[in-house]
Image (cartoon, rainbow over the protein chains, first blue to last red):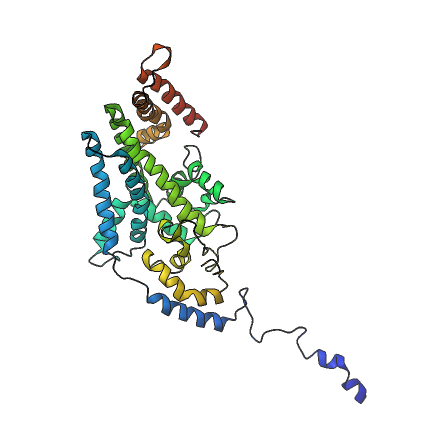
Length: 319
Length: 64
């Protein structure tokens, strides 16, 4: 071999990479595993600061709202109830009840084995009665949603998906139609398929609560209080369920298709109705990352986590 | 028992039509002072509308 052959460019190029590459393999987020691990450690350290806190206001809100709502029935029969005001309050209680029950679903009011566990279960049980949605079913289905967020078959809330806001509102109503496999019908089917003792209990409780709901409406209606029953329970339940499904299910998870990763299954979005009226759902991503952070602290936690979320590829531009 | 309850729930739209929508229609007609057509009572009118609507919802699987 001549000296000229040894110095030929072809011999050099076989030793160097074909293209400019990072020294460590990068994931689809553009980060190597060491960077991802460091970011995760930092993320956990920040998130830990926002776990816990005062949870008694959730319990007070749940029990007082439920008591006020219950009082509407005898007051309406006695004819001393301001029906338009009761209607508005009932709608608020239906929506707000889901927020308090949501904390109980994640055991944020009392962990299993702690002295406030009974309170956690009681808050959950009373909170969802106005929307005729037993806590046992709500908890099982919500946890399934967390385990399989945006999975077309396994996420119980996947049926809320719609291409735009208007169709999403329509779908909240459509999914409740008797022959449609959406919303509570979809939940009942999943529970029947699960077949566990907890699922069977949830199905029985759902049946009992639905019968109590219908029994109350029928009794009130045939004794001359149909309008009162409609404005205290029937309409607020429908309005509340649509509102809940839009803000808690569609808005933070749309579009769902193919978005199942930890940092991509929930979006940060700017709500037109603000933080309180959207029930803090603008920061729902924080809840999916750390369900132990209570709802009222997710906003604060989001801004603390924002640089890390941005580094992980989350679109943080809306907020 | 569970089978009976399942059957009741399966026919719930129809029961809802006669159990709730019918008296609701009748009481709204009283509130807004609307007489029932063809000389029938308001509750009879409510039962016709509510019962039919509930039955259709039961068969079609949609209220609208």
